[in-house]
Image 1 (cartoon, rainbow, N blue to C red):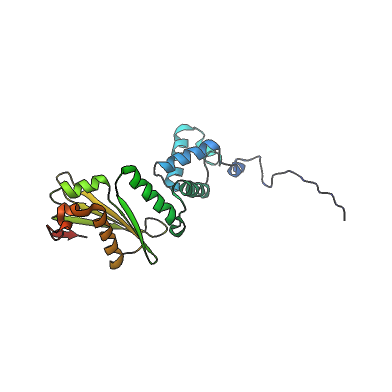
Image 2 (cartoon, helix red, strand yellow; image 1 turned 180 degrees about the vertical axis):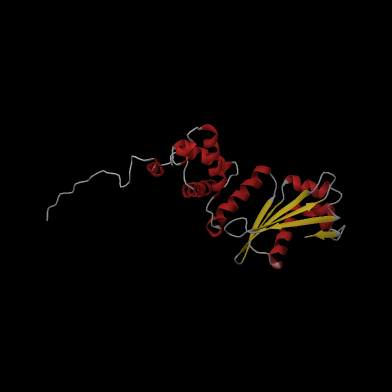
Length: 224
């Protein structure tokens, strides 16, 4: 049957009140500002707070501007843009989807520094990443306390994958100096053993001032 369609282009909300401003699309300038804040290390919440603070400092009618979504987006928009930016710069946020991407980044870093400073292995469903930069390797070789004392600080739930980060430090006259970083998906003994073995492979015979080469049977004291 023939029919005729008529489109009536009307808003389904009031456009004569300040409340209508919350339906506007965030401007390009605001999106660029958010991306810049993300690249500096801000989270979606802290980036949005920076925008709100800037509005309060630079607009006398800031209550009205804060209600304008084109200048002050909502948290959901900030989070979606944050996730999109991370996936573009660092690959998928799900580890199972991004492990190949991560391996490529680790290989690229080793190539750029012309040294093997990071490795990653998989053990069944667990992943273990070890990082020991050129500076950290010098701490192993030059700091006299490295074969004597090592502090291990662990932090968990840093991302939605629940990764654990173990930072190895040794004391010095200027404070704690880094010896390496181990990132794992588990705190099991088997996984941590693999992490420490990766650190030994990366540093080589100079690990902990030569302790890994047979001169000293490891540090005298481990603080965890």
